[in-house]
Image 1 (cartoon, one colour):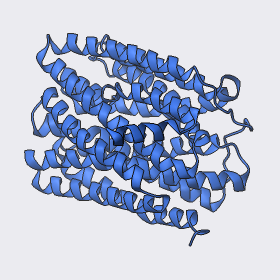
Image 2: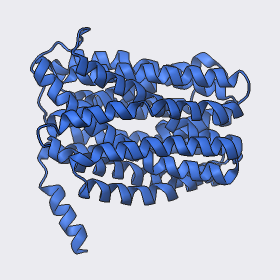
Image 3: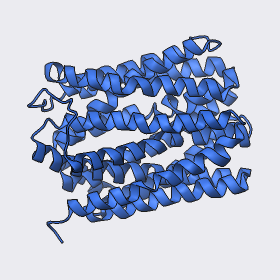
Amino acid sequence: MKFLFAEFAFFRSQNRHVRTLLITMFIYFLTSPLQNTFSCAYILRQTHSVKTMMWFLLALYSAVPVTSWIVGRWMNRWGAERMLAFGLALTGVSMFTLSLVSLSSVWAVSLVGAAIGVAIAFVWASHNYLVFVSTTDESRNYFQSLEQSCLTFCSMLSSFVIGWFVSRVWTPEISYLIVKGVALLFTVASAIIIMRDRFPIPQKPAFVFFRYTPLAWKLFGFAFLRGFTQLFAIMVPVLLVFCVLRQNEFLLGKVQSIGALVAGLLLYIVGRVSAPRHRIWLYIASAVMYALGACVNAVLNTAASSLVFIMILLFFGPLMDMSYTTLFLRAADKIAEEEKRNSYTYIFAQECFFYLGRLVTMGMIFGALYFSEEKIITIAFPILTLFHLFSIPIAWSLSKMEFSEQS
């Protein structure tokens, strides 16, 4: 108990903006499994088509860079916290709509995917800017680890409850509708909380540029390669459970819950004890484990290897997010100071390069689908993770720049 009180006191010592943002995202994270894993599972259950699920994800991610531009245009007028609140509420509405729309048409699926993509972009573009202006380099390891721990714990709880509810209570269609109705209430509650605070707005409204320093282009290359694994991390659990372990949302929920419980504890400990100089090693470990897990599972392609691979993703996925984000924000801090530009410039550019990386991933997956769904697991995923290893030298270079004054 003494440990918990000490950790709560440390949380209370953070500035108000950080506390408000963390509480808001904690409630929002309770809906996170629905936004990606279970939305994809729902589409697969209804259509039995990986291709339809891919069109859903393509529409979702295509909406992100366009919406991020809109967020940047409106941020000076309305404030990032209002943009975030709107995105939170819209997320709940768009997920609930997915349960009401007929999925027989690719256009209907794509339209709902685009709506969810707009909501996600409002949330994460605003969130990333607020993290940028509310934290310091010294506090970001703690912030990111606590946020990722909250995400994994919430995913654990939600995944188990959703998987059990959909598989064991009423019909899957009615169960999904009820679950997404509850998610709508959570997203509205989180929107109300963030609206109670006021955050700094960008001092310079311009944020779209086409000429950058070589260091900035290196940073954008880092974001491009990171985009490879974002779609990958969403699709892997769904495809493995539905294609290898047989269609079962309850199994999907149990697997994610058990892995998330262990991952959440480890992530929080890593964030509390690690220093900025450790970020590069955490990133390298995550990237290598991604590639190793994908390649071993592709060779074995058994139920046991699939479960191990999902467990790897559940821990090393959030760890990669934590290390990548802290490396990116620190480098962006320095570049924004050198180029004398609005900090949102680099958040928007990051979303654009994420999208380019996701497009490469989608192209490779569509290519694998031309042969069979199994080729996604045995060929596309290993190739993507091996390509992603090229991000390690870029991350190493950025980390050396970060600590050059301390060496």
